[in-house]
Amino acid sequence: MFQGVAPALVTPFTKDDEVDEGGLRANIEFVIENGVSGIVPAGCTGEAATLSFEEQKKIIDIAVDVSSVPVIAGTGSNNTKEAIELTKYAADAGADIAMLITPYYNKPTDAGMIAHYKTVASSCDIPILLYNVPSRTGRNMGAHVSAELANVDNIVGIKEASGDLNQVSEIIRLTQNKNFVVISGDDSVTLPILALGGKGVISVAANVIPRQMSDLVGAFLKGDIEKAREIHHTVYPLLRDLFVETNPIPVKAAMNWMGRAAGEPRLPLVPLGQEGAVRLRRTMESLGLL
Image (cartoon, rainbow, N blue to C red; front, side, top):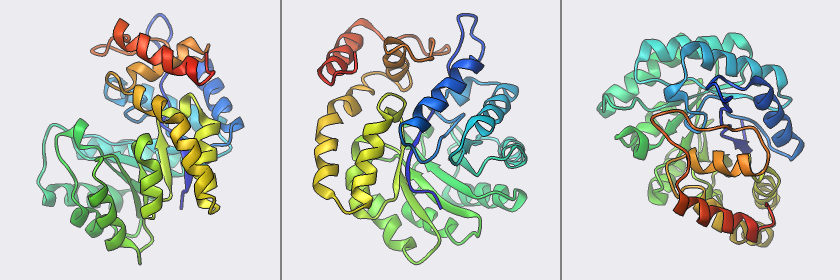
C-alpha cells in the first residue's frame, strides 16, 4: 500500500479554459523528478467539481501515461452511480488506486456513507482510498465509520483532512491490525499524523515544493525525526499560506509565479486577491522560491 508523498495535482487550464495537456504532463514529470512517491490527478485540488466527466477521464489517462509512480485517481462523487462509473474507468485506464471523497451536499448519515463506499467497492476491482474532508463536504466521516469500512477487502486506507488529530489517532488505533493506512490530507499536520502512525501525505504544497515534502516524509519514515521536524518548521509558513484563500486558488498563483503550468482557477473560483497574493509572495520569497 502507498506511503510517502503524493501531490494533489492542480489541473492546469489554458487561457481558453481548456485542460492544458502539455502543462499537466510537464507538472507530473517535475514532481516525479523531485522524489514524490505517487500522484493524485482529478482530486479537489484538481478542481474535480468543475471538470466534466470527459475531462476527468482525460486527466486520468494523461497521468497514467506519464507517471512512473503510483496513480491515485480522484473518482469520487455525491452520486454513487457516477462514482462507480468513474472508478471503473480509472481501473480500466490503469490507475493504481481510486480516491473517493465522502458524498458532498447530500449529507448522508453514517449508514449512508458506509452503503455508498461498500457499493462502489463491490462494483470495482481497484484498491480504494477513502477521503474525509468535512470542510468541503459538510459531513465528517467518524473514526467508527472508517474502521467499519476498513473491513472491506479493497478499501485500503483513508486520506484524512478533518484536521482533528484525536480522530486520526482513533482511526489508527481501530485499524492498526488491518490492511489499512492513514494518509494526511493536510500539509501542516503531516508531521503529527506521521507521529501517530500515518504513512504519508497527499499534498497541495508538493505541487510547489515536492523535494522538501518528500524529504520531510522520507526522513521521518527512516527514523530521522529531527530532520523531519527541521524541514517542517522551515516550510510551515508556506504550508499555512497556501490556504490564505480557498484551495487551489493560492497554489495556482504560486505555480504561475514560478513558471509552472496552472492557469486560472475555474469559476466560481477566481484568482488570488491582492492581500493574499502579497502574503504568499512574501513567504515564497523568504524561502527562495521566487
